[in-house]
Length: 80
Image (cartoon, rainbow, N blue to C red):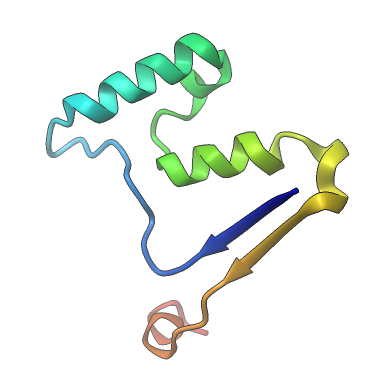
């Protein structure tokens, strides 16, 4: 089973405006173990977890659930 819960924050990700050695190392290690990570280095760690745990495995779709937090201010910013 995979349960993804999402809120307002995108998550830890590489930001071209600042250096993050720990995240670079994390991405390098992830890419060594899971080569597909190299295609998604611009994504957040949270998104990579969801890709790995659920979205890249369509055969497991019946065991996957995503929940989104509905926050009034966030919805207004997104036009919803």
